Image 1 (cartoon, rainbow, N blue to C red):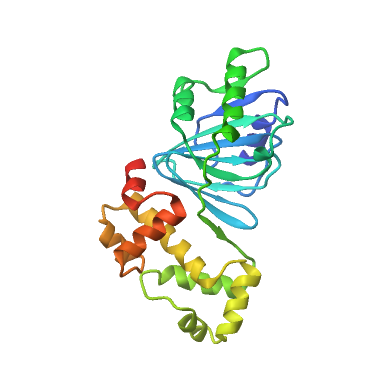
Image 2 (cartoon, one colour):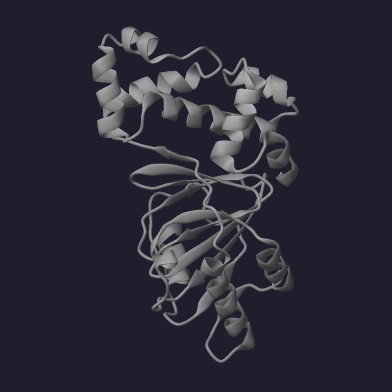
Length: 260
């Protein structure tokens, strides 16, 4: 039995249990899914979750809700952060649980997680721990928190993947639609259509997200100042960098660093 099959067996072994797992078990697993909905909490770094359509970036002190039967591929460096997975059995609930979303960990949720910090394994109906975890799950949609919006669309279009790979390599350079189209021998109009039809996002918005994602990684891995970060990811205007970071992450770069 492969590790992935063993993980699926453990998660879905009991239909009616809530399972808490704290081991770093999903490092670079291929796409998989569970019968249970998954609450994945991230502390101390950045986790990366990939679906068929998008790459999601989950920063420290945030969680992602993954609906049941939702294929996903999670990647993270186990040395950089702590992961808590809580798997909930299927039940009839609010629309919130049908959508994948990333949200900040509130003070109340943090306190509930702290209270249950030593819990691990399966908890069944009739146990007070089970009731506590069900209450925790029920809290999630009630908080009405703003979603974390860093989502990079993906595609199987080989030509576009060559272009985006090149953009990643040159992220510190001035990147324009005209220059990029010329480099790959296509018209500006065709390049615009390619991004819109395959990624459903504009070239400019893709570059914005790519730069902020790189900045997040640099904040995690280096001691660069905000000014140095801005230049490193292609911004000459520090205010524009900070404002874009705020727009996409709901935090200033200094606030994001404080979470790590």
